[in-house]
Image 1 (tube, one colour):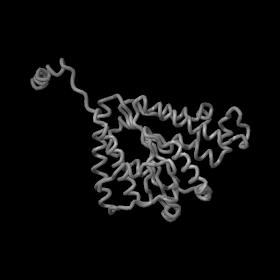
Image 2 (image 1 turned 60 degrees about the vertical axis):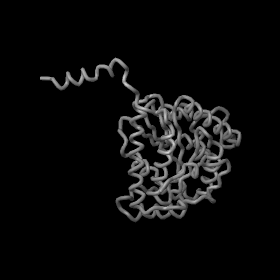
Image 3 (image 1 turned 30 degrees about the horizontal axis):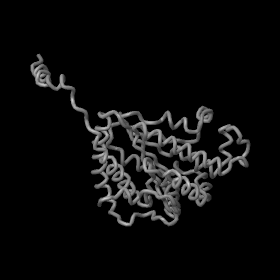
Length: 292
């Protein structure tokens, strides 16, 4: 099955309730896993070229509601990568040190270097999602002019969208290929996955009572996601909305989109040896072969 990345790119007016959480065309679990294995091997080959080329980085960002499958997707899509060429960060509640800086600081210092893939499991978008649903969290940032939640206006969020767009534009201008994926899970499927956590003893540790509190705010989160995606999906840093109710298919779609877009970067090649070294290859081989 061929995936067209453009079919999943977000537009300027996102209405998540009208988007499918299951792909229109689906493979069996076995078929999806087989095709994923093929595309992730090709991605690993691209990673080798990226590492050797050493002029660009790739940043892959994942957002989604709890149980949308971010952790397992990252594990399955990137499992063939050389570990020295990939870094992964899961951003949780900001620490005291992180709160003492601007909200983008902890994301800047986690960025991949040239030749590396970086994976953000939850991202800088938490700062216009969770903090928007729970604006009192902003009080911990000790921001000038924000003394109570009454001071958090639409102008404040407009400013943050502008800051995020500028942050991403800077990354791209300096050689980072940026991908942003929203795993679009249905509320019914989240219910099933939460029940599975409760029904399977080995999954109990993943469950928290806070999961149900956040679930009650589902519609609030969807509104925040819709605006965040609409305001920040650009040509240089697009959002892709991935139907997430079928985990094997979601993994395949993400892997295929990455591969399709990165294979277009035809200038990413393994560099040629310098002329002096190339001219001495036979000599070097002879030295090794005749070692005593």
